[in-house]
Image (cartoon, rainbow, N blue to C red):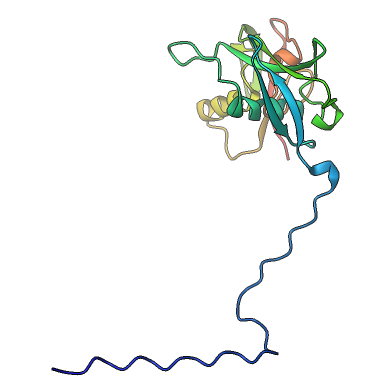
Length: 190
């Protein structure tokens, strides 16, 4: 029987003064106190409560969207259609979705308030197209944008909604309370 092949010679260890052959990842930037997540007591519709941490630089609408994935179910009917969405409130007053989380008082509960997903007929303008359509008021604008881009074949990304003012991706049209006939613009941002 043949002898097993000899093991390859071991490489010599680098001298102690030589740099390590390992790649050192870049140092993470230090986080300012303002960037540390803020803990809130979140009050759900129906009275349940959960603790949750949200990023201070996020808009309130972005924080609400994250909270839906963490502590509150997406409100849908048996067909999977969105029936409501949430807005944030403190002391019973709705907080604008474009406000920063850092402007809220973490000592006070953050309430998630259900907003019905009613529809209104709006004039829609998008990349040269102009038409009237029923549009949901409590669907996050990023979802409406995704639908409009696919349906109208809008090229690329970076599209967003404007209805009286620019809407963030997680804001809902109920924020600006459009009336029938108001204009919804799909615009490129960038």
